[in-house]
Image (cartoon, rainbow, N blue to C red; front, side, top):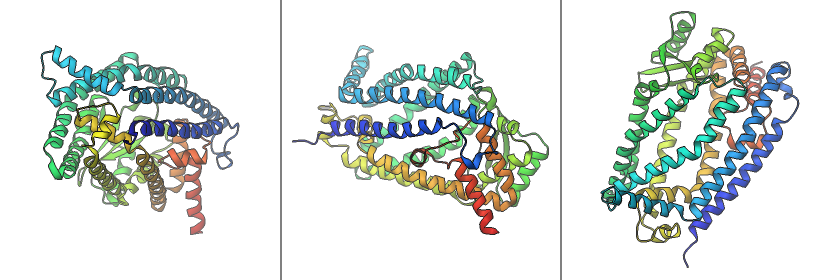
Length: 425
C-alpha cells in the first residue's frame, strides 16, 4: 500500500490553517483592546491609537475572509485533482493551436499561462477591495484605478517576458542534470538571483516608481557623512515617489560591493519631524550592513535553496508521489517542483519560524548599533513616528508576533533601547 501523500499534504494544510487562524483570533482580540500598552502611554496619542485600532481591525477581518477562500481553493484544487486536469487541458490547448504537446517546455508554459489567468481572476477582487476600500478608508491609498490597472498590466508583461526563459532553463537543467542536478539548479538560481538583484532596481523598479536623487541640503549631507564615517560605499542616494501609491513609508539599501545605494520614501521624509530622525532610521539600516546581517541572510537563503533542490532530486522520480497527486504515466518537471514544495510544507514552517527569530535578533542589534552612534532618542522618535503614520498595530499578541513577525513590536524595541541605557548607567 502506497503512502497517501495527497491526503497528508491537504490534511497538514488544513491543520496549519486552523493553527494560524487561532493565532489570528488571538491577534484580533489584541486589536480590540481599548487602551495602549503601558510603555506607549503618553508616547502615542489617543487619536493615533484609535485610528490604528480601526485600521488593524479592518485588515484583520479582511484577512479572515481572504485566508478562508485561499485554503478552500488550494486544498480543493489538490484534493479534487484539478492540477492534473488543468495540466491535461493545457496539452489539449497546444494540440488545438497546432503545437506539440509532448514538448514539455511548451506544455509547461501553456500550463503557467492558464495558472496566471486563474490567479489574476481569483486575486483581483481581494486586491481591489484591499486597495480601494480598506487602504482608502484609512487614508493610505493614493492610487487611481487607472494606475492600479497600469501596474497590473506591467506586472503581467514582465512575467511574460522574464518567466519563459527561466522556466525553460530549469526544465532543461532537470532533464540534463544527472547526478549533479542539485548543484546545477542551485548554481542557476544563484546566478539568477544576482542578475535580478542587479537589474531590478535599475530596470524594473523604475517602471513602477520614479527615483530621483536626494536634493543637496542638510539631510543629504548628514547621510553622506554618516556613510563615510562607517566606510559605507554609498554611490547614489535616491528619493522614491511612494506617495503616488500609498502614504506608507520606508527606507532601504541595495547594491553589491562598492556600489551601494540608499532609497528613501518621500513619505518618510515628510512624516519625520526633522532630518536627524531620518538619519537615525538610515543608521539602523547601515547597522545591518556593518554587522553583516545582509550577507548572513543571503548565505542562509543559498544554503536553504541548495537543500531544497537536494531534497527535490531525491523525490523527483517517485512514481508513487506523482500518482498520489493524480499524475499517471507522466512526471513533468514543474509539477514535480510544485508537489515537492507541498510535501515539505511542515519543514518550511519551522524554517520560517527560525528565520523570523534570527531576523528579530538582527533588528535589535541594528537598533543598538544606531544607538551607539548617538541616535538613541532620534531612533525612538523615528520608530514611534513610523508606527503612528503607518497605523501599525499597537497591541500585539505574544504568540502571534513570535510566529509571524520578522521585526519586533514597537514596545519591545523601545524597551530594548531603554535597557541598553540602564546597562550603561
